[in-house]
Length: 173
Image (cartoon, rainbow, N blue to C red; front, side, top):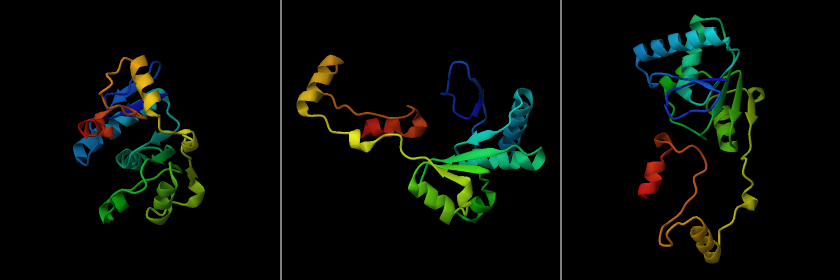
């Protein structure tokens, strides 16, 4: 597994990680990243690319224009995102696309006009029937067990703790 990312917070033992320049619409950065991707793809004989962001997918689309085609899988992590004419024509979506919700799937079909046969919907990995609010007694016991002051607010974050995920905004709230 090889990962090329613009975020310097992804470190997994045994996985080769490359740091791209911050992904944006600056043509020089786009060309730099495409050239860097090309060197990674050649050196590691990459057969398929998986992206999680529109701009990453756009980079692969531009890459495939200049270099031999490499298949891509795109995962949409939101039900919808801002669209305009420019963003629509710059869109590049995978041969296969993963929707993480029904809303995401509808957006792919109705707005992005992605073929239904190229979309796979992945259902929520958490069974919300197993989620429940702790009683005050259970909450107090857990705080005592984990040495959390009783007057402190606690919350759970499922996912990567990174600025891009808005954790600081949640804490400030």
